[in-house]
Amino acid sequence: MEIYLRPVQRTLSVAAGVNLLDALREHHVPVSYSCLAGRCGTCRCKIIDGDVLESGREAQRPLVGEDRYVLACQTFLTESCTVEIAEPDEVVVHAAKIVKAVVLAVEDQTHDIKRLRLRPAKPIEFSPGQYAQLQFTPDHIRPYSMAGLCADGELEFHVRLVPDGRVTGYIANTLKVGDAVRVSGPLGSAYLRRKHEGPMLCVAGGTGLAPILSIIRGVVAEGMQNPIHLYFGVRSERDIYGRQWLADLQLQHSQLHVHVVVTSGQALGCRSGLVTEAIAQDWRSLEGFRAYLCGAPPMVEAATLLVQQMGVLPEQIYADAFYASGT
Ligand SMILES: Cc1cc2nc3c(=O)[nH]c(=O)nc-3n(C[C@H](O)[C@H](O)[C@H](O)COP(=O)(O)OP(=O)(O)OC[C@H]3O[C@@H](n4cnc5c(N)ncnc54)[C@H](O)[C@@H]3O)c2cc1C
Ligand code: FES
Image (cartoon, rainbow, N blue to C red):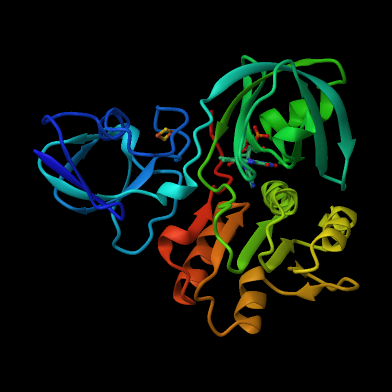
């Protein structure tokens, strides 16, 4: 049995029943992975032809057209097939690990957003835009996106308090400076593509600003010159935060264009409506763009459809929507 790999044009001989990720790693094919358990989405590949057996589903991502995406770590090969692997020159491998951390600060950003800063006992390597699973107690575990960079020496998260939310309620009412938190990660495939030199569309809804800030900070730290068009959507004026951080980043990156879009009401210096409406008003085509979409699932799903219709290639849309865990 053989796997033909695109775009690297390699053919691997493999045994029937082998796991796709194991086969790629055994043959030293550069491929991103992290959790090895179907959770992080980092090992996502596209099946071009042939049939495979999946033991997990790509539940964390909206379906993109008819394309058949699978998680390599959850896929077993049953016949010869052609597989498209994600940009081999953008591979990131940060083995997922569990690190103890302590709470440095829990600060108010808005009426319902807290900025949580943690000091990890050991450094955690991650790429800008990734997230981690935070365990506050055995019963309080949720994923949150890093807002900073691994060089910071501390981890920054932005948490929006959900009404009657179990874990966000714990963060708001019980968590205090000095408490221990277990950080497990990094996870996620919506990380900054460092080799890309073209324009970037960044869409953040609410605390989706956290991973987007990390990505923009990554662009600045790497000395990348890409034009960045950020659309930051919030419900109303009181939900806007992070404007000073964005202004500071604009001073360091003159090609960063920021649009704050308020869904209801008006706010000084902001646009009104939905982020998707603002994007559709501003652009006729987004061909050649890479799109980073972060925040609540309905916004991410609507933005995914829109940017795809406007010419962004499905494999160049990077999104880890904030799906509720339900446990
Ligand atoms: C990959 C990933 C990254 C994430 N990153 C962040 C982040 O950086 N910042 C952040 O604030 N959150 C983030 N989240 C969401 C976060 O993990 C929790 O789901 C959220 O904080 C609610 O947890 P909870 O225990 O308080 O609510 P739960 O007790 O789980 O839910 C309470 C109720 O609120 C609903 N609900 C849960 N989450 C939301 C929501 N986001 N919007 C509306 N209703 C909701 C539930 O359906 C339920 O009815 C991320 C999620 C994922 C999957
Ligand atoms: S390594 Fe496959 S989903 Fe995480």
